[in-house]
Amino acid sequence: MNEYLKNPRIRLMGADLELYGLRKDGTEFPVDIALGYIKTKDGIIVLSVVRDITEHKKMEEAIRISEAKYRNIFENAAEGISRHQLMGAYLPQTPHVFVFWAILRSMNLLQVLQMYANYMQNREGGCI
Image 1 (tube, rainbow, N blue to C red):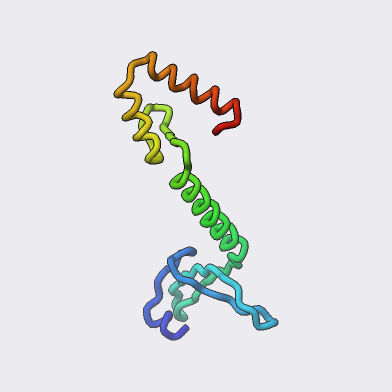
Image 2: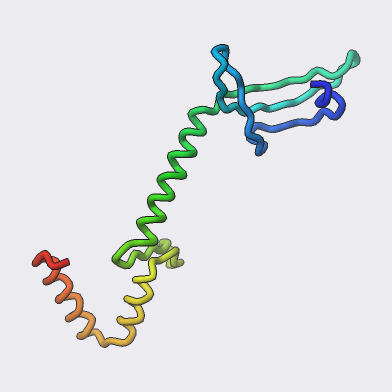
């Protein structure tokens, strides 16, 4: 506290520090602490807000795991996956999409339709 009083500053919550609180039973838990101060004629008054962010940390970890699973599926998909925005901007695509477009560009429409018909026939027959 003495160090803070030597150089008081506002610290917003979530300011890139891993902070932990200590429960009565001795277990630690993640916290977020906001600090502020008020200068008065009698000196500096320090204001602090301490918030338990255990649930927030659990949600962040769940999102990280979910994103890793999605990225793994996307990057290792056997089929081509292409995404684009409504305005037509392309988002990340799997390598198979580029191969697919290269094949389509080298074929005429009849060849493309025949390739699609063969694919559907094999798929319905359980070959794919």
